[in-house]
Length: 367
Ligand code: IPM
Ligand code: MG
Image (cartoon, rainbow, N blue to C red):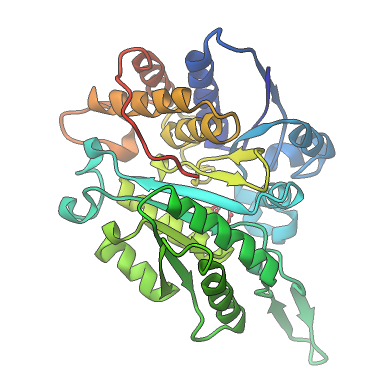
């Protein structure tokens, strides 16, 4: 029996999570029992309990082995302080469970070579992981807030803060990920301007002494954002802080054709993980059966691999995604000439149907 908390959240999060659960049930079949329990988070949590992370949801997440998460965010977030917003439920959940290592694999499926806004010869063969630190940085650093000075004028304050221990553990995660792949790690910082980031660089270099086989490089975040679209194939594993990782991973999504293609896994020191598409809740297309469920389905595959060790099942799901793409199924965001445009549910059905017909190729694991 595996215990999974299902937290669909808001907007398209609900729709894509339903497809991930559909494909999960299809791939597991009767091989082992699944104990799925659903709970509210984000705007759904605020509506039901007045809290973006209701205590009962946190408690469910604590006693589950893995969490399948959809998205948190509602249009009214624009008009309230971040700490009261729907997305804060997700941030608190990550922090409460110490899920500090967020793996965001960026893989271009060859079928989507022409779906990217970038030239095919630039994105062909892209296969990297952006490892984003997830529980520190400007997101959580104190002091924070808006202060009113003696002149009655307000100032906003957020603090970029990283302890050595926080940098060390994410650096280890980065080197280990690189060891399982092409053994290249690029650390992205802003050490030329920010003291916190100079410490980041020093600690990453020190940890690197324990991984002599990994080729370590460093880029400032501005240069990294350019390199990502100039020559993305140079990257194997990128390790970076919370804020830079948030920004660079949205940018990198376009290398894979659409942000609707990028899954993620957030892990701590154990096997428990939170699995979520990197995209948001897209209120403009929510409830219309338009969203691409592939990021959510690939996140579920990462869950099978990383929390449960079911490598074969994970590989089958990934092969089925590729199979459905090869058969020409496309949601609007990745639509190409000559392909068949389908909705969220139909894409989920196509992937579930492809599970038994698609041969599985060996694939590098994310951790
Ligand atoms: C992400 C999202 C979240 C973040 C939001 C929803 C709080 O953008 O997972 O990338 O900023 O971490
Ligand atoms: Mg983001």
